[in-house]
Amino acid sequence: MKKMRLDRFLSNAGIGSRKEVKALIKGQRVLVDNSIINDPGYIIEPTKAEVMVDNQPVTYKKFHYLMLNKPAGVISATRDNLHQTVVDLLPSQYKHLDLFPVGRLDRDTEGLLIMTNDGQLAHRILSPKNKVPKIYYAVIEGKVTFEDVDVFQKGIKLNENFTTLPAQLTILKSCHRSEVHVTVFEGKFHQVKRMFEAVGKKVVYLKRICMGNLYLDEKLAPGQIRELAKHELDLLNMAAHTSDQ
Ligand code: URA
Image (cartoon, rainbow, N blue to C red; front, side, top):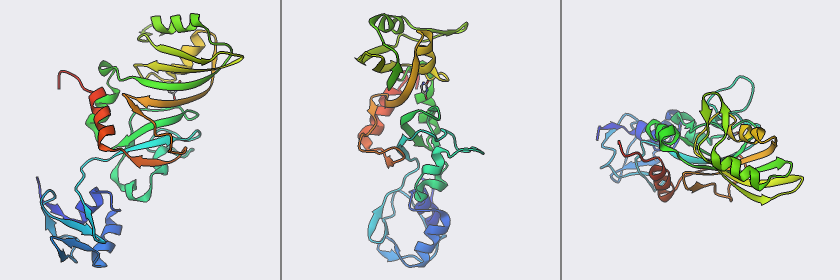
């Protein structure tokens, strides 16, 4: 692996911005192979050097993978002139890492959103040919019926050029306001809302709870973010696996 500057190593590892890690180094809080290093430009081999900050070991990370419970009212984009974006929600140690959301949720949709700087994984998750399942919990105005389940199961024509793959609709509660789980295999604009419109019903609340077998951590309150565990990243990689890679 290519050698790199100590400040870059620490910054890529998510310790802080370049400016913040330079301050740590100058403050004599960084050890490399058991020696205090004062020079931010000190060159190390990322996979070989033993780096400690405040006596805590730091391992090299090229890519970061975060799980966000997206709150309503926030845009799934890196930048917006009007509204708060999911990037604005990142804790400061992640702000400089060029993380972006994997796919989009509508502004009023809540729930599971992966943020990463791994463009290849994002591409594989979003590629239609990988048919990565997404499960949503939805509250629907009106009574959802078993006929609706059948219509979803056959696939729904959203326009002249596009019919969804068979989608699984599970009725949790059927009343004047219904509650459902719906599993879809694409990520078209307003897809779930348009599928319910096609059966004459309106989505009044939408939350993504699963993507490719990775479930939203229910302990994450809306707006909270945490790193994915190794087994969670494996779940995503498995779901986004194609035979031609
Ligand atoms: N389907 C929708 O209609 N909106 C979302 O945010 C996600 C899926």
